[in-house]
Image (cartoon, rainbow, N blue to C red; front, side):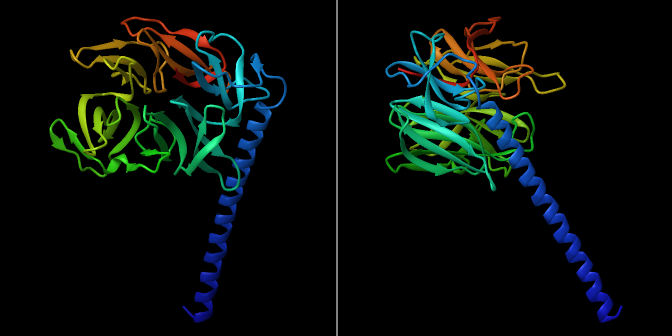
Length: 340
């Protein structure tokens, strides 16, 4: 092959590579613009829910407003003693929200070119205190009694229903405390240290200033683990458990549990009595893909997408007993948290 022929071949390859890159970039731009337009369409017009202009103070239920119209996606709240009343709306839009101890954790997608992701920490009135970037799509967040914030984001993929995702879960405080990525904690599964490269951690729930529960996954299996911030350890409790949430009295942990023998992934809800070790499984007609929140010791809350309504969801309530049936609790809402 002559030098001129080699040059021509390389030139053709470079042109093809540039063309492929241009097509990929154009596709990304189009997708971002379409996503932004869909968001704009949902957030324009009169709200489908009864709203007020200010967030209520005191004991309240904080959530993401999914009612179409003005205020779509924004932080919303209703008084704890009037959950079916008009919702107050904040000024900040979130994709995942959690409120506790006078703080609000708002995980959000900032749509643009490129699209970025961040966590904002707000005070109870919705004013920003701090913010930091996220590595990917927001997934889970919780706040401890002493102001630590746990966040989980998808690094690759965007569904717990597949095995092809990677998460990053961190715990940090607004006072400078930073425990880093929980994947770097020592993991003990059934007494043996887990060192597999495919391990993932997500779904933190705080039990005290030091203790917490979370999910560890590796090799296609998941475990409920108990964690210690001081010791930087994660120790398995039970297998087949995801997205835990501890009850207000600290005696039980609720979590998602995969149902065996079905085609598509289906999660039921299970409740573990920590002292007795007894597990109560609650089979659900529709699979649940949310982190449970406890309204009180006798009632759990979770979000469920509305069938046939893309981008909309409802908050359902469920008693922590076998064969309980979910009940509609708050319409057009997602990501509930109870702040007392």
